[in-house]
Image (tube, rainbow, N blue to C red; front, side, top):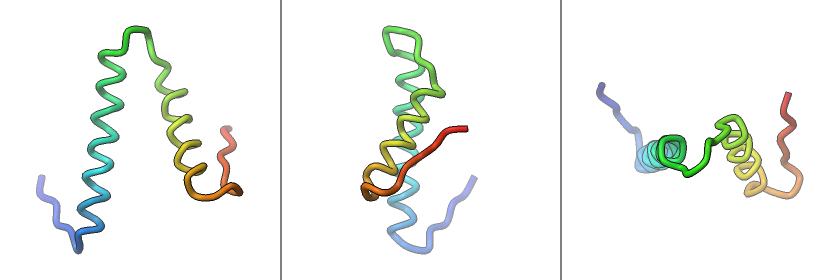
Length: 61
């Protein structure tokens, strides 16, 4: 698969998503206890929105 990036920002975002995906895989495969990936992903979403501003929030379904 070939990827083309218009600018360095897009390339940097892709690298960060790649790192994030690798961390999720490492946690899922190697953490000492079983991991609820739904909880992990929901926590990541909440953390992302918390970093934006105090008024952004996530309400799960």
